[in-house]
Image (cartoon, rainbow, N blue to C red; front, side, top):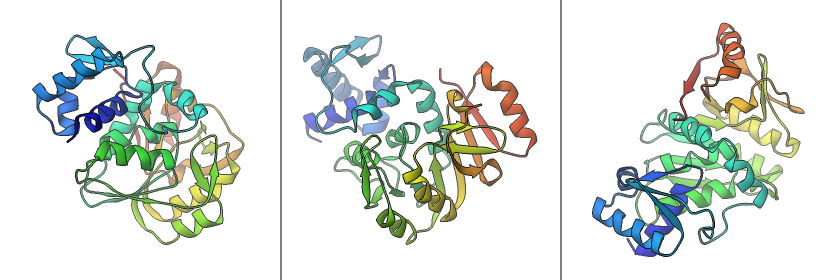
Length: 265
């Protein structure tokens, strides 16, 4: 692999996580520890990262990785509860097996799936330009996930495409899993704000055998404008452990919803 490509992939992996270690990057990129240490040193020399004990973290004044990485508003939301979203995504990715077909809705929590699934031999169906691009960058020239990207009208704040073209595209496919985010989750339903994408999201649910809802603690107890789905239709609800959501999660469990709680640390 060319050095600059590998360095871009390292910077991509660094997005949304406080720190990267040598071992983790070796596993994700299939490179030796000596190679990754050299890349860390080069990125540090260029001022793009800061060194930590055994790894790197993003430099506070580092330039963004080359190429479009999504709308500015998306990047701002991505940084909010980034460690929690990454832990949730890691747990969701563990549900997938080789050969699976998965539909992934655009969003900042589902975006964190990219680093964990880019090298898996699976098929991804998505309405997110940002997710499709991230998987392609992380995979590089190696074998890994096959990405099917829908057409449609671009939603500039999210990098998601929607409308009749996207809906017709989704009707062509069937998936084992659908991974979706939400703006709000209460005891009855998951809700979202973007009405333009709602029909596509409901089609993702209809075209999939199992539904995983990925939502960090900040989404619980909130209700957005549009009902995405009742919680009774969710196969697995994945969230982070947080004291403020403990009581609500317990009530949701009593309704029969399967919940996975993960630690962000």
